[in-house]
Amino acid sequence: MLGILRQRAIDGGLAASTLRRTRFALVSARSYAAGAKEMTIRDALNSAIDEEMSADPKVFVMGEEVGQYQGAYKITKGLLEKYGPERVYDTPITEAGFTGIGVGAAYAGLKPVVEFMTFNFSMQAIDHIINSAAKSNYMSAGQINVPIVFRGPNGAAAGVGAQHSQCYAAWYASVPGLKVLAPYSAEDARGLLKAAIRDPDPVVFLENELLYGESFPISEEALDSSFCLPIGKAKIEREGKDVTIVTFSKMVGFALKAAEKLAEEGISAEVINLRSIRPLDRATINASVRKTSRLVTVEEGFPQHGVCAEICASVVEESFSYLDAPVERIAGADVPMPYAANLERLALPQIEDIVRASKRACYRSK
Image (tube, rainbow, N blue to C red; front, side, top):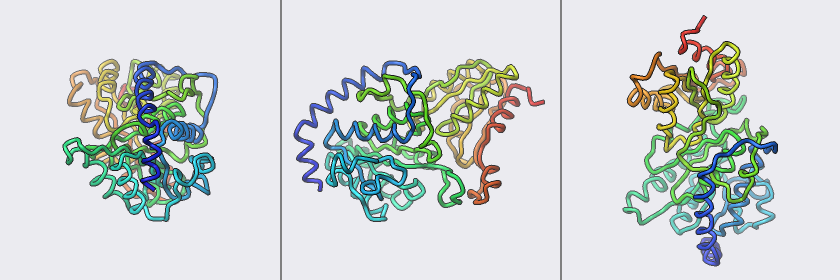
């Protein structure tokens, strides 16, 4: 397998790589305004993988049901037919096994895109992700690059219970050597996944199952095959002056809806879409807080040692004197996810929670 793919990579892989690096430098400097066209997250991810496989013969896909079934969520639809079984590998149900093979392929210079049917199953492969992929570049004094992407749905879906509902953003973002990305919109999904596949380091790419079928406006630039977003840069989705709301993935949509409700009461909320969990865009977060003097953070994960906790610590360390109110932290309940629908809703942040916290920060709680 590796021999066939490596031989194909030699035939023009270098030229394609050089051209993409040049395009990345040009495209990532631009701003991306929303256009009239729309695209679902599913199609955005599928098109990003397809274009990167077409541009670089070293890229291949592996995971459970990614080939003949075209992916559990149809993210890899059409790829087996287009690229064949040598580059789209259906694996047995053994995350530890195929993740180890993927890391080994990356050691050899290939660029695997490993799909987990859900990131909850990545626990079976966490030794390869952390000890083999994340640490090898440092332990080899920079001699070994591990250009691999681990992608799949992360966090709560609906009615799937505690073992299929965890958010792993904080888990993986705590590990030096990994980059951790979490898209919200179709533009995020396309631009960040392309950046992840081209990156020389291991990237954990956290998607949200409930967003796969959602459609988002997408610009003409984002539809270009050369489009790419810089890793480590957040996006201000909505500008405001009274309170800063920082979040990622599905919760960005909740924050934007909360901002609309707050506007009806005369509160101007700035909404920041992190996009990148590691590296974290501390500069954008702190610049916003220094403007609004108030901070509300939102995540679906557990509250203790969470992404929000790190953001709050950063703001207290770097912008404490600018705060006019205590920081507000909204997270999932500190319990395993309930199965019952009514309890599941109570265990996750809701739009009204963001509104209440923002009003408290602005001393408008009544």
